[in-house]
Length: 102
Image (cartoon, rainbow, N blue to C red):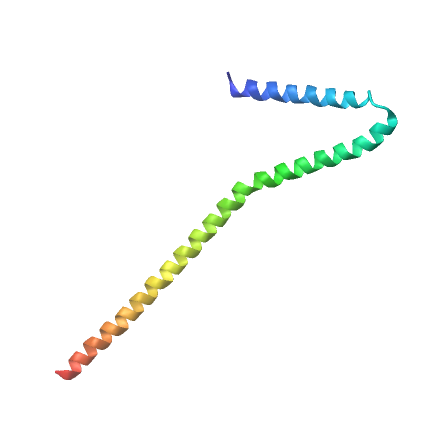
């Protein structure tokens, strides 16, 4: 089945379910609705915030991995630079020492 058809079907199904749930609240008395509606609003807000934060986790992990790779590459580059400097100093000193002995 086409993905667009599935998306439309489940969107319409969710909308019908939401309207049916809201209509179901009208069957309760006024006092029950006054206590139930704030709790349901809090639940809905918490669900939306939770979904938003869970949706950001993959992006945050990707950003952290890219940053970590950059830091590892910087450290590796710095170590290679220090190795070259140390090697040239030691090798250069060894060559100078042997040239002076001759």
